[in-house]
Length: 95
Image (cartoon, rainbow, N blue to C red; front, side):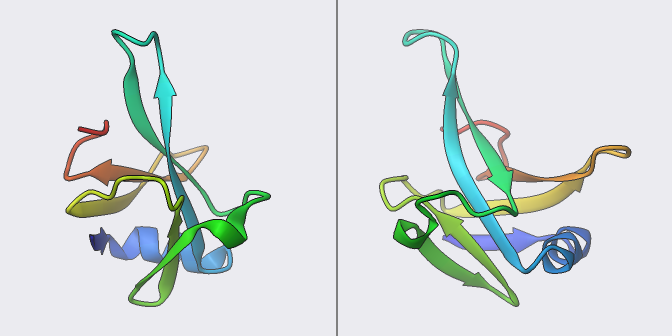
């Protein structure tokens, strides 16, 4: 998996400790649901079990069971409530 982070996203994560946790979260019904990526700079309780990927100065963690995209893009979104968005091969949802 190749990780592409904007300078703003890299700076945002570094200001919060340099760790970013990315997980796939299913929403909707079994037939018409979407799987979106959710990010956090706060470690979940099972963080030690996650896969760690070095991304040029920041560490990105993903659950071991999660299928990986070819490319994970990280960017900052929001004006009042800033957060990191993760894009799966350029898409806002998991393919």
